[in-house]
Every structure is written in structure tokens, then in C-alpha cells.
Length: 134
Image (tube, rainbow, N blue to C red; front, side, top):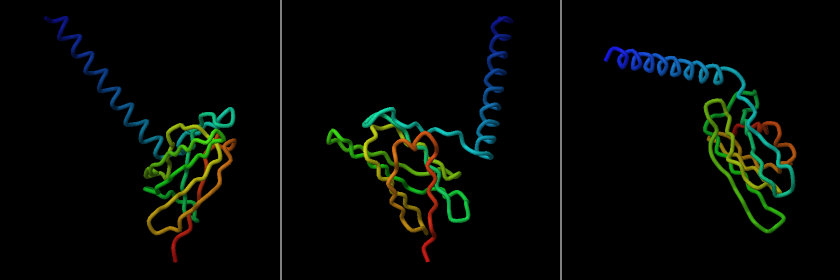
């Protein structure tokens, strides 16, 4: 009984320290630059991933910007990924097959942006600066 109680206490202490470490990592990553999650495809129609950073003209992050990445492949298929930026203006899109790419970014209070993206540039984050509506 004593051994079981001791094992249970050790497990709870470990869980508590993991929760603390996870909270500290989340705070640290939100305070600094987010790590690059982009991946350029190795070949045409290969799988890649776009790491999007949306900023305003002053360089401030734009949270809740909605982005769509359209991929027109040379084999005739069409793929797309979409979603919204977090509070840091960051969104790592799900991986998809990369052909000719068009990125569309929309955010409340800003002009829409439509950008042709070179799939080879996906090894680094793609930064989009939005202009406020007048």
C-alpha cells in the first residue's frame, strides 16, 4: 500500500512538472518568433507546407486573418488548404501537393491580398503585409 501511494505521488509530481513546462514553452514561443514550419516540395506536384506570417504595414501581427492556398498541379488536379492566423499572425497550413500556387489572404479592416507564391520559397515563412482599408 505504501509503495503504491509513493508511486502515485511520483506520477502526479511528474504530471505537474510537465504541465508547468508546457505552459512555459507556450509563453516563450508566443513571446518570441514562432519556429519555421514551412517545407518546400522536392519536386513539381510534391508535398510542401506553407508557413504564413500576416502583418500590417507597421509590422504588427494580424490575428484571425483567413488564408486560402490554391494549388493547380501539372497533372490536372486542384488542391487547397485554408485556415486562420493565430494571435501572433502565424498559420502553418496543412501539407499538400504543390503545383502553381495562389495565396489569398483576407482580414477584417484590411484590403484582400492575392499573391502568386513560388513553391521553392516555402522553405522559409511567407510574409504577407496587409494594407488597411481607407
